[in-house]
Length: 248
Length: 376
Image (cartoon, rainbow over all chains, first blue to last red; front, side, top):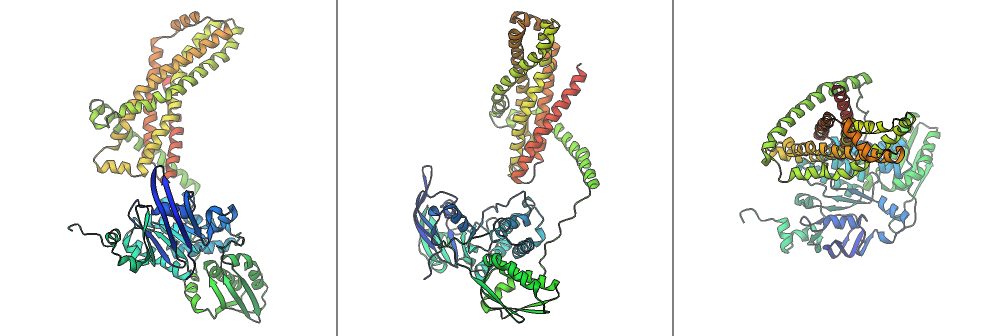
């Protein structure tokens, strides 16, 4: 069995007096699409931000590709960050730059490629997310779905082996949601990217997930394959995948 | 440039190439890291290549990412410019999908949309300013004036305690800075005049100068400028944030008039608090002048005050108050007008706030000039 790409051990996280993550341990397998799911407020985004190093570790340890972020020196941390792409919940595009410039930022800042090649790479990424026509627009001029696709193009600008997506399909219509899912799947199969999704959109989970981590009230309730999750008898998981209809 | 640091998370990338006759053999990884290192060598190879046909053999390529694929396209373009026919052969099965995905023909940066000429921009800006903005501004002013009067008698239209809250924000919280600034301005005014007046032995006239300048002009103007900077910006940013976060739309869908609900309490509060702040500014400005007159011109406070009573007419105080009422209206109307026009996310809020301060101060000074001419 291949070594996990992410290992979380005994992680706990508090906001003031509230325990958001309670001694959780999990592993994310390489080359697969893993989904961290659970009800709103169960600690999914907090876990993601800890993995990304955006929240400092309070208790426990997180290893990404075998390296513990907290023990790395600054240049190594930067190198590790360059090997991860992140699609934030609201896109987090830089409003003062056009879509094209947004996608070009990581390439211009972190590579020494010639300008023409960067231009072609940006056009390719925008073509992949279906935004060729919007490259000169500014983020406030984009719809919610376009903003997420532009943010995805920026997240994959450096072809990172590890891609994190925080609620990629939240608030999108089913057609846009499906096309975004297809794109994530393509990145996983074509580029062998390990994808970590944080979501509670069941249609997306059913379409994409190879591996599932289910959080409930700050604890890992389940981790395993999607098939195992779908056949789980644990009440919170059953309720999640098979919600009772209003009459029940 | 990404450097290798030998960390465990870095899968080492290796790449080599070899030109045999008309065939260029690429080996191992063709990805961002190797492209960065070897692209210049490959480019130079193609540029120096003398034959008309170049076959790129990918048989031994193990990994190919988008940067690798685009670099092949880049080499293809360089070859085409030199009249060399470049073809890719023996693409391994596991790379076929990547090649199909990334080697798309004719993906080009689209030309930016045509920007209008300077004359077109000028005409558009003039139309926006003199037709659209002024008309909208007048509408908002009329609407606000209507609800301002109506809501004096219908307090139920607002949140309970809103007037007091706004009075505190616009008035009471601004008091310390207004007292300090007006005291300093009064002192400076007196100090600059003291030198000249002493030369003519006209020390006593310092009271005339300070009192009339402050009560008729400086007091209301200074207070209004400070309120424009402090509360005008706050009103504009609050309303702009509400517009951007759709709170204003939410109010409309709840059948609430945004202007009435958000702006009218601020207008009531500003109309009450600005004259009060102006009175404070006058008193502390005069106090500043009195202190300087006593310290530098040996003018005892009693004489200063009796001279002040002689020269200060009730009409002057009334003029100052009237001015402050006009300024209060101008600041609230301008800030809320700009706030309601905010577009474009958080950046729009910042832009609106800056505009509100600049336009409010400009309008305050413009109104002061007009009123100064009227009441001269």
